[in-house]
Amino acid sequence: MTISREYGAAGLAIADGVAHALGYELLTDDLPKSVAARLGTSAESVSQIASAEQSLPERLLAGLGEGTAEVITPRAPRLPDEFDEAVRREIERTIRERAERGDVVILGRNAGVLLGSRPDLLRVFLTAEREWRVERLRAAFGQDRAAALADIERVDAARRKFAKDRYKYSWGDARSYDLTLEVSRFGIEAAVALIVAAVRAAGTPLER
Image 1: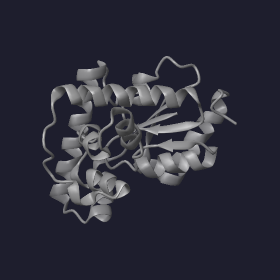
Image 2: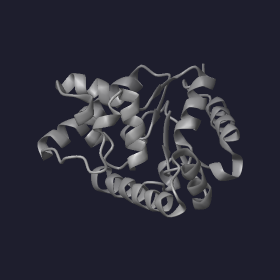
Image 3: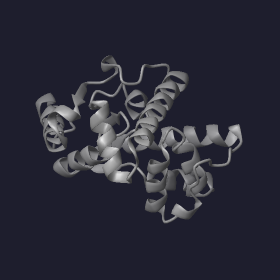
């Protein structure tokens, strides 16, 4: 299963809840580590590429997960284009290989379009009212409204552009997904339950 989301739409909380409910592995911030090992470089260097569309709070959280928060800066140094492309190819290969083993929830990384031809795949997109996302970011990171709103607009725009430039599809377009959920209407727990119900109703190998 892949989960894509607007920034601030509780993607991590929902992906974690779905993975726990189904007994699946959750693939998120550990991806730069495995990619770095394959490329013979540091997880921090990979994170600069993998997190290019993220806000500073997201990058800080990723850094904390790797024990390297002190190296995360608002403006990371630009790496050579060849390395950038090598990282992105390795991320894509890692996602495909992990999907082959099944029983995994993959958050972000445009995994839905990468794996879109698989018959055992459920592709989910999470959206939410802008003010709901603003309030969630303010509570999580202590941002003021203007900063939270700026992050939402910038991150969503970057994700949309990256999806169009690299994968030639419209990020967030319901036709690119099997299920689109309005999280601000249902809430996090109900969103988890709806996704799990969709897996079971589909009757695919996703269900145990």
